[in-house]
Image: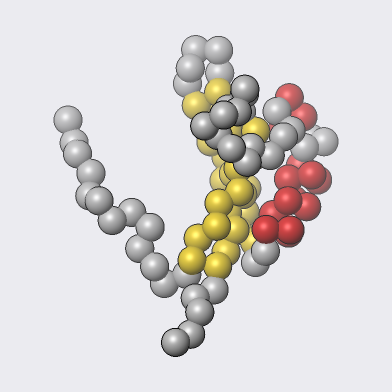
Length: 86
């Protein structure tokens, strides 16, 4: 059995006062460390500096805005439940 490789997706979320969410796809990295390094670099730039943190636990985060790093295994389905339309 071979292990599947993973990639790490770095995104930034800014939740506006109105509740609207603005997601920015930053990049895809071969390691979590590389994604974290990118977040640190970008955290100094305009806009990102307002919400520079990496959100590790979104359920308990005081502020939802910030950087998110998600691991995705390659060659696997990541949305398997279908969806509902209204």
